[in-house]
Image (tube, rainbow, N blue to C red; front, side):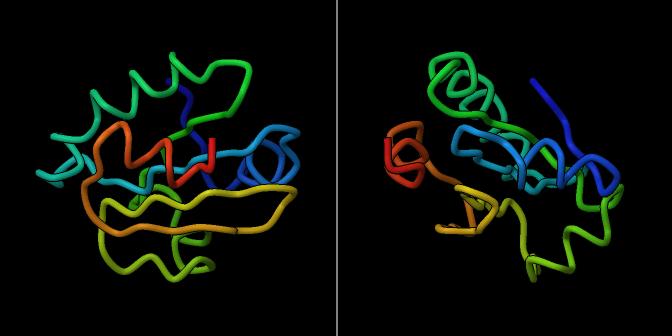
Length: 102
């Protein structure tokens, strides 16, 4: 599972050639912990078709604020450097795949 932060967000997410699903989470967040295995499985399943990364909101305050993340987990899909879809709260693997548009 790949993690991103404020220093590599632009390179790893905004400049990525593939669609990117960013999981905004925190270590203390119960719903984030429940959905983590689903996110990891999705990352493995979509390898080569999409990129799935995690961003700890406490370690990346600039990116968290820039995308107005107020509740976690929040999932934001980026394509060609732009946020194109978003969901707040837990989602199934199928729901995350649909969010990505794949």
